Length: 337
Image (tube, rainbow, N blue to C red):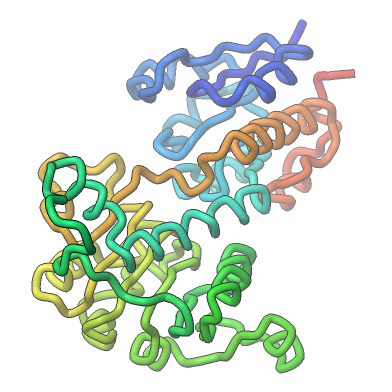
C-alpha cells in the first residue's frame, strides 16, 4: 500500500508530481488553509505532511496523527511546527533552506530601492492624474542609495547575499551578528563589524536578516528605533516579530525614521485595520520574498525530496531534527522500496 500524504495547500506542480509517483496524495485545492478541525481530521491517517507557514502543526495535532512519520515544510521558517514534540514522537521534520537566498535578497534590495526612491508613491501619483507638469514633482524627491551606509542585522546566507547587492551600489556595509566573522572573512566579504546599537546609529539603511528566536523577538523595539537616523529606512524580509510592530508604527508616524519596507509582519495576513496600511512612508508587500517561479518550484521539489527520503528510509536532504533517528531509526519508518 502506498504511503498517504497530505499537502496543506497547492505548492508548485513539480513537487506534487514527485510525490504522486510514489504516494497516495491529497492536496488542499484552495489558497486558504483548511479549518483546524478539518486539518486534524485530514492528517489523522497520513504518513507524511507537506505544510506551509500558517499551518499550525502543534502538539495537539501531532498527537492525533498516529501514523505520521515525516513533516516537510515548504519554508525556511519552522515556527509553525512543534519540532520538539515531533522529535519526541519519532517524526522527521524537513525544511527548505538555501534555495530562497537570492530571491529574498533581491526582494530586500527591491524594497530598499522602492522606499528610497518612492516608487509606489510615484506610481500612485501618475495613476491618479497628478502628473500635470513636465519635470519631477518636488514632493516625490527620494534619497540616494549610491555610496551610502547599509547595516545588515544577521549575516547568514541571505545577509551575505544582501551585502553583495549593496556592493554593487558602492555602499559601505556594516553588520551585527551574535557571532563575529574572522578578520579574513570580513575582508573577503567587504563588511565591517559593529555592535548592534552602533550599527543602528550609523546606518542610512538597516536590513533585517536574523531568524526569529526567543532572543530576537522584538530585537528592534522603541528604544532601538530611536537610535536610528531620522533619515534612515529599515527593511524587513526576515520575520515580522523581530521588530516590535507597535513601536515601528509610532516611529513611522512620528518620523523617528524616514520609512520602512516590509515583507513580513507580526500577524499575517495583515488585518485590514492595521495602522501600517494608512501610512505613506512604508512599502508593504505580502510575504513574497521567495516568490519567483524558479525559487518556489525548487522549494516544492526539496519539500517533496525531504518527505520521500524519510519514507525510503534515508536521511532527508534538509532536516531540522537529526536527533530523531535515535528515537525512531529510519529503518522503522521506511515504506518505499
